[in-house]
Image 1 (cartoon, rainbow, N blue to C red):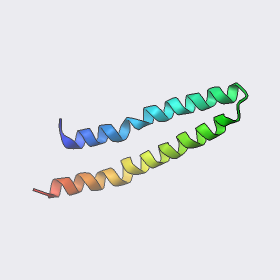
Image 2 (cartoon, one colour; image 1 turned 45 degrees about the horizontal axis):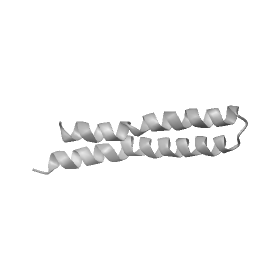
Image 3 (cartoon, helix red, strand yellow; image 1 turned 120 degrees about the horizontal axis):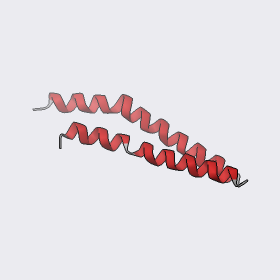
Image 4 (tube, rainbow, N blue to C red; image 1 turned 90 degrees about the vertical axis):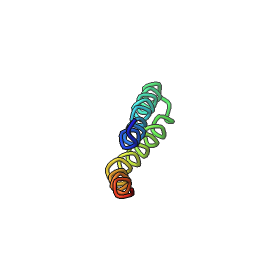
Length: 69
């Protein structure tokens, strides 16, 4: 597998975990458990960090790999 495709795969996979965490948080809130808010905040922070990695860091890493022989 191409290293660039592998990098992009591993940067995109955590979004599935973020969706699962959001569903768990919503389930907790529907069950009248205030812990659901913390789970939702954690999922949001994970999603933001993942987006920064995908949009900002990954292109720099790919460009650096293409320059090195």
